[in-house]
Each structure stands twice: as C-alpha cells, then as structure tokens.
Figure 1 (cartoon, rainbow, N blue to C red):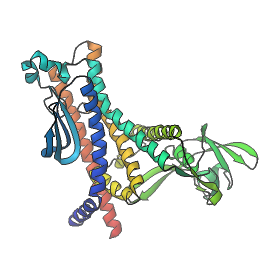
Figure 2: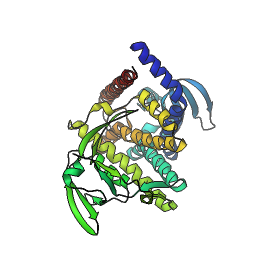
Figure 3: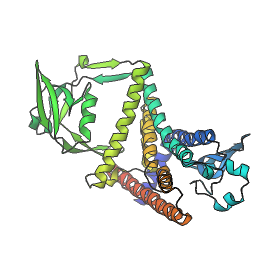
Figure 4: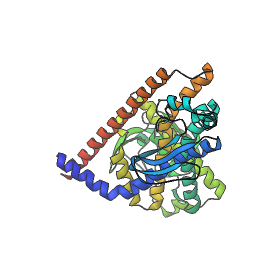
Length: 384
C-alpha cells in the first residue's frame, strides 16, 4: 500500500511538475514583488529577493545591492529587507544597534508604522491584483459561453421539486441577487446548503416567488470530494439557450473584480463554517493535491491553468492576511498594536508570537499533508 502510494505520488509529480511550478512561481513572484516594490518606494534597502527556499541555484546581485535568487526548494519565497534577521522579517536587534545613521535610514524596522504596514500589505494586495488581471484578461480576450438561467429539468426528490420548481422556469434572482446565467444560480446556491433561499422565477408570463432549501451534496472529483449546496435542476440543452458573450475592457475589469471577490466570499464562507463546525477540515489541500490540480487544469489548456493561478493567488493573499505571527497578517497585527500603544511590543512578546505563528503554520501543513495522503490513498483504492 505504502509503495503504491509513493508510486502514485511520484507519477503525479512527474506529470504535473511543470504546471505546478508555473502556477506557484507566478503567484509567489507577484506576492514578493509587491513587498519589494513598495519597500523600495518607501526607501527600504533590500538584501535579497528569493523564489524558493534553501540553497541558491541561480542568482545575481543588482546595482542597488539586492541579491536576486532562485533557490532549491520551490515552495514559496521571501524578500529580506535591511535590518531583517531572517526571511520572516524578524528584526536583527544586534545588527540594528550597530547600524550607522545612513544604514538605519534604509532599515525596514526604522521606518514608520504606516510605511511598514504598507510594505507588508503590498504582498497580499499584489496577489488580489494578479487575480483581477487574469480574470479581466480572460474575459476580454476569450469571452465566456453562458447558459440562460432556464430550468431544463427538475430532479425527483430534490430541493427544487420540494419547492415546486418546474421545467421551463426561468430563475431571475436568488435572495434578491440577479441571476443572468445558469452559473449565477449555481454560485448563489452552492455555499448555502441547508439554508432557506428566496427565488424569483418567471413561469410563462408570470413572475413568482418561491422558497427552497438546497441539499448538501458530496460530489466526487479527481481532485477530491466537493461538498456543495444543490437545488436539483439541470441547465437547458437547447442551443438557443447557450450564447457566447464578448466584453469591453471596462466590462472585463468588472468581471475580474467580481470573480476575485467571489473567491474571497467562498473562502471566507468556508472558514466561517469550519469554525462553527458546519464544514470539514478535509477540504484543505497540500502541495501534492495542488500539483495534481495544476496538472489537471493544464490538460484543459492554458486558459484553465491561468484560472487556477488566479484562484491560488487569491488563496495565498487571504491566508497571508490571517492575523497570525509569521504571516503578513501577524505583522499587521503587531503594527496595529504598536500604533495603538505608541511603542512596539517587547522583543520577548514578539518572539513568543512568532513561535505561536510557526506552530500554526506547521499544524496547517501537517493537516494538509494528511488530507493529501487520504486523498491519494482513496484514489489508489478506487483503482484497485
């Protein structure tokens, strides 16, 4: 069993390595570039800009003194500013004490709270901007094929049948939000399993209001089991109900913002339900399953791989904003406390916070790895 697991994992790694490295490198580079650009704008010296961790594979030193590095372990990256002890921006107290006035002027930790906060926030913001840019470009250059929000058929004993929906109904809105396409309906329903929704529908020439409670469905996929809310309706297969939409640059930008916000909302809803016990922790994926997803999406073409890049970029941005020391959100938390107190937390308090942050990150990685082991083990079981 263990040998079979390793064999499957190794095969996945060979098949998915290039798409995975592409997605992760783009997301990490943009995140760190946000830190770098705003840091330079604020007059901070940058010692190194690294894609990956560990020993350097390739690198060069720019005229401004920054060492640009490609490192051996491609699972992240960092920007090390002047005055940093390590890649987590822990201050090097001894070095700061020995600095000359000119050196202190370029030190990250000697900058104002507002500038430090701007530099730290720039990484996650860059991730959100990347996602917006990808979705905007996709809409502008490719457009979208969309189904009309019309019900082709109602599944027996489903939430839709209990609500009285009928074939031919057009769903105009869900909980007051307009649904222009069948995808809009799915998105409005998928995160509301077990919750009462108000649907505004058009039946013949009459507008009606009905209430429905979506069922929770577990949908097995190659990337794991998805738990979503479903009404139990099918989209129309009539070619007249399918259309290709093209968008202006402004319309595409609006779509880019809306798509990015949808991911933020979905992620927030998941973690909110996770805290309240209404969602399972097994949805958290580690490196192997992300690599699998990259290879799977790449099989559908570059456009699909870009969509995964945007999704991962938003996820990385959100995770980094969690107020846990060691993450960007933890630094922002410290700066908020410093602004409120008028002075930073003690070195001991900050060190204790970073230890908590490290424990959180390690625990999250262990959970994700265990989920991946179970996922690939299930795949092996199905193949057997």
